Amino acid sequence: MKHGREESDVVSLVDDVLADAIRCRASDIHFEPTGSRLIIKYRLDGVLSVVEELPKIVSENVVARLKVLGGLLTYRNDIPQEGRISGHETPDQAGRVADKRLAIFPTIHGQRAVVRIFYETAAFTELSQLGFSDYICSSLRSIAGQNQGVLLLTGPAGSGKSTTLAALLRHILRTYPGKSVVSLEDPVERNIEGVTQVQIPPSGDMTFPVALRSLLRQDPEVLMIGEVRDAETARIGIQAGLTGHLLMSTMHSGSPAGAFLRLLEMGIEPYQVTSSVIAVLNQRLVRRLCETCKARDAQTEAYAAVGCAACMNTGFRGRVLIAEMVQLDGRLRKAVLARADLDEMESILKERGHMTMAQDGLRLVGAGLTTKDEVDKACGTA
Image (cartoon, rainbow, N blue to C red):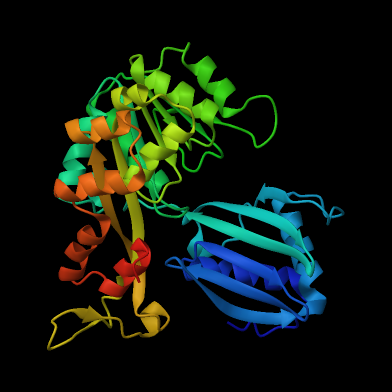
C-alpha cells in the first residue's frame, strides 16, 4: 500500500491507512515502531501482514495523530492508554463500521498503537448463520431454553465467542419474549435491542464481581458475562447458575476439559461444577477459501488456495467457524468430582466418541470451504 503523498502529511496518512484497512476489511491495524522504521500491519482473516514501512521520523507524529482521534492525552508517552476513534470513513464506507478502538503502549523504540475495527453486519446475527454443525446448533437452542445453569465458551481472542453469545441472546429474546436479559461487558462490543447492557470500566469501584452481585438482586433470568477472569467472578457466576439463572460467559481455555479443570483450580467445588455447568463450547475461526480463485486437486479432490486480486493474493477471503461441544454425562461428571487430570478427561471424551474440533473442521474441508492445513493450524496440530 502506497499513499502517494509526502510522509510528513501525517493527518492524511493516518486517514488513508484507516480507510484502506476498512476497504480490505482488516480487523486490526498495528503501528509498530522499530529502531529504524514504523511498520504498519493489517490483520486480514486472522493473519497479520506488513502493508507499509515508514521512516522512523514520522512514528511519534503518527501516534500523536491517533491519540487526537481517540481523545487520548498526547503529552503522556510513558503510560498505556485506550480510547475510541469516531468517523473518518470514506463516504462509501459510511455505516459499515460499528466501532474503532485504539490502544497505545510504550516500548523501547517508541509508542506502539493498535486499532481494532468492528464492522456492522447482518450476516452473523442468528445462530443458524454462524456455521455450527446441526448437532451444536440444536444443542445451543436447547440450552437457551433452560431456566438455570452455566454455558461456557472457550477459545482464544478473536475466535468469535462474542458473536456467538450475541446470537444466543437474540435467539432467547425472540423465542422467549418477556425474559429479563442482562449483560456485563468490558467493553460493550455490540448493541443488542432488548438486552440491558452494562459496561464495566477498566478501573474503578464497579468490578465484575461487584456488578454481578448487585445484578442478582435485579431479578434477571438470563445473565451474560463477557469473561470469567478471576475466582471471585467464577464463584458468583456458578452460584447464579445454581439458583435459577441461565448464565453464559467466556473463559480462556484450550479445550472443554481444560475449562472444567480451570474452574476447579479457581476454587470452585467439584459438586458445584457438575451441578451448574450445562456445557462447554470450544470454537475457532479458520480462513475461508476464496470462491473466485480456489482450485480443486484432481487426485485428492480437495480444494487449495491459489490467490487473486479479489483476495489480495492470499487465496482466502473471510473466515468460517469450527467448534466442539461437551455436555456432562455420568462418567465425565464422576471424573470432575474425583478431580481427574486433563489426560483422563480427554480419554473419557475420546472413548465416548466425542466429535473434536479438528473432526468438525473436516466437514468444512469436504465442503470446499477451507483446507486441512488451516484446520490443523487452528487446532494446534500443524
